[in-house]
Image (cartoon, rainbow, N blue to C red; front, side, top):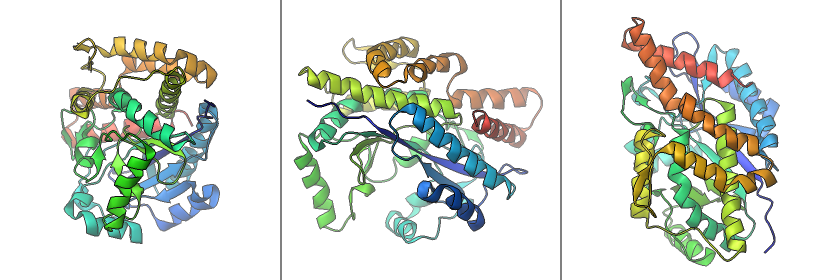
Length: 375
């Protein structure tokens, strides 16, 4: 079995805020034109006018992805500043109201607004997607089936959306609560082969319910455009280095599962009913509540899970030259995820005497600072 290159690509969605009010702001056409002039089609508008999306080119390793994302983040930040704006990379804005936002006037987004109705209007959320290059189609399906087990782990480490319209939701990732209202979301079903997957997609295309598989928004899917598997489970990250660690984890887990396949082994399949329980725990608690080990039938604390995950992919991290990024995941146990840090900023602001709106603005200030920390 020839080894794939396990190339990676990363897409991130950002929110644009007014530097004075810290509320969401519309991306001016001049901002988009300036970004495109620098980075071509690596920068594009998103569904809502207050959003902007970036994507790396195909990267051979995480080091190359770092260079790409640093340039993209710097480009967006520099051009946004010319219009009195700043980007933040959090999956929900802490206080702005979705009812005040409007979708981008493009045919693709107009069609989405028409097809999805009121559900689309609430899509004030941002995510990050990680592509891992797997040329063989049946191998893509086999790896998607197995990698689904680890989606809750990736979600837990990425959580960055505790607030919604000025309220603490009690969740670490409120983004998924909004996203799951769309059709064709959630954990991917298990398929026995690429042919079965293709027949399933083609049935919807034949009935003109979707034009292609890009309208299937599972947490993990074979990409509609590239020979990759695409993880879509993660909240977007304020800090560039956390993005890279999560991308490295996705890449290494994929290679680890390929390594098992090469030895005629595989990760045990569990029914999505059980995996959904861990997905919910990650959505609710992030890394503070632990996840279920279905072999032991116990809830295991995340510090133990982190050690196990890092040990499991250590060989792969060495081959893929991302050991430092994988080891950096341990830092989340000390600093918390973005959701944890946002809550700390909010609590500190309240304790210092800020009222509710001022405390929420303090959270946005902290998100702006984190976005620029590694640039």
